[in-house]
Length: 201
Image 1 (tube, rainbow, N blue to C red):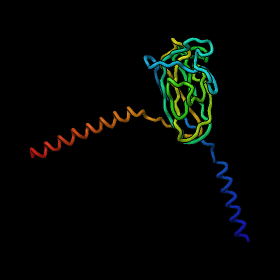
Image 2 (cartoon, helix red, strand yellow; image 1 turned 30 degrees about the vertical axis):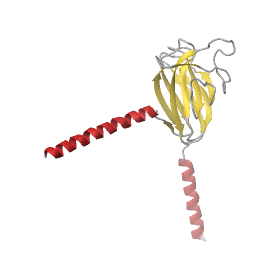
Image 3 (spheres, helix red, strand yellow; image 1 turned 90 degrees about the vertical axis):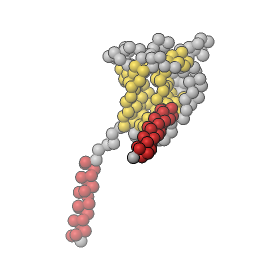
Image 4 (cartoon, rainbow, N blue to C red; image 1 turned 180 degrees about the vertical axis):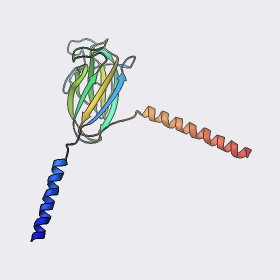
């Protein structure tokens, strides 16, 4: 009986040590930089959660046709994720080199079908304060569009995504093909040189 008591006491002690030394999981953070200068333009959405209008639809104008940059990513864990964006020269939420605007899409993004698969859109505090948060699902494709609030708003930016699990950038297919082509060309040159060397020897 004494041995049983000692065993239980040791187990309880180990449990308390584990509880005391346990730390809460840290949120994953991904930060990247970009530049919308001289990028393709689109007629951005109006703000909304989700947006239901394209800019200018309500007043019958052409709306805001502005340059944009797209970042594709997946998350490894479902949960709440927060998005923020900062621009050069911002010392508060109300100043900076230009006024940026974020739009989040799920599964696909088409700049001519602005309201298809859109989740949320909002102008962002230029000093990098959170623009919005959203529940995301693991292993689904997401597209974060950084664009301008007005026609003359464009430039460099730094975006931050943070949340429950690791955030993984999805390379563009063109980049992957370009890399594969370069590797293939390199291997071909190497094989030809090796074949020539064998002939000479």
